[in-house]
Image (cartoon, rainbow, N blue to C red; front, side, top):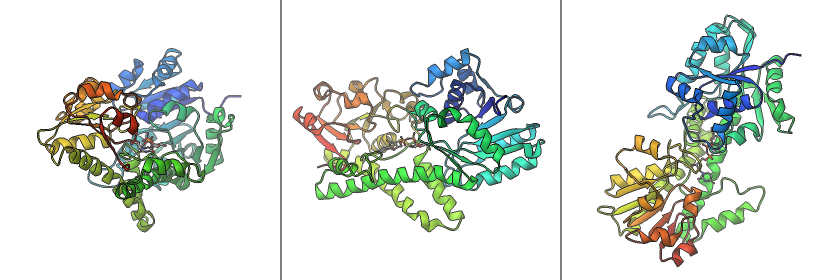
Length: 442
Ligand code: UGA
């Protein structure tokens, strides 16, 4: 018989939405993506990704060519086309506040709901404060001409930038928050290709599904800050946090993932999600329950300060008149995303303290240049470290891990390096005459 949901729309075509739209088309659905940014829609329609994500562009192109995937800026078209509408718009941190800015999500319902005249399911994927789904369901019921036939469900997304395709097509788990059997049935049907592979599907209510997402990110942030707190202790005790982390990781109750000590977490998700989570807990009267996240955030920020201090120490106490070569601008490797990038935070701080800073990154240079025109940029690692008194490795791209210490050393003024990601082999760099320092190691 006819499938319950054949035609899907994806609202918002950022990292999450563009990936979701292309991957759902790849699974065989007819997909229409929408964004308020006409330029983004023009680029996507031409088969060009507005951001860097390994493996996604071929999937985008293939599904544009076979006609399963299209993009538009028209909500009329979206409402008319979709059996199912996925909300994938952003929820950034509000400037100067901890809370998330919900205006894009709210605007989506305002635009979509009055146009919904037939049975459909609206599925939220954006990361939101707990209680949002309940609130949106009430607005939908009030605004949609289809009445109860236009329903809401929640289906958080756990994809990582750099692994977005793999994480979307083969997620660790699928979580759905539903209030009716019909909504559950539609979602189960959509995700059949994945559940058939044995991927677990957890069915729950709205608030639990919303909380799974933010608590997962809170846990990951906590794990990173835990090991970075150990790094602070290691520095004081002349111990080696990389060995400590390795030894801990053999206990499977602890596990080795997200236990990498270094400059800490950044990006568009972890930092703002833990802050929005604290803000929401405050509104719910349970701020004490999440007060530890304040420490998680503080530990994370202290790593950036420590990095700057270490570099300054290596230069004898001042950046003034000194040249600093920075390797990395993206918040992590395999991404061109510079949102809350620890690397750029360090680079701009050093520049503000009088250093001549030149930055190189394999993918994030355009974004970095736009956001920080005050910094200088190199065309390669070699170029960025030319005449440097100290080199800082701040994003662990494979290209940097594989650098030859002798080749890189040929162009610098002094062989000083601070490995902010514990990505290099200290022995090898010291053997090549470098003064090697790292976060959390003697
Ligand atoms: C994160 C989560 O990992 C995803 O599961 C989630 O879906 C996503 O946020 C989201 O909410 O949308 P992402 O922001 O792409 O994904 O980045 P991560 O791979 O989680 O890395 C976050 C930061 O932690 C990076 O700056 C990375 O350098 C840092 N990190 C990671 C460490 O400092 N140490 C580690 O051991 C691991």
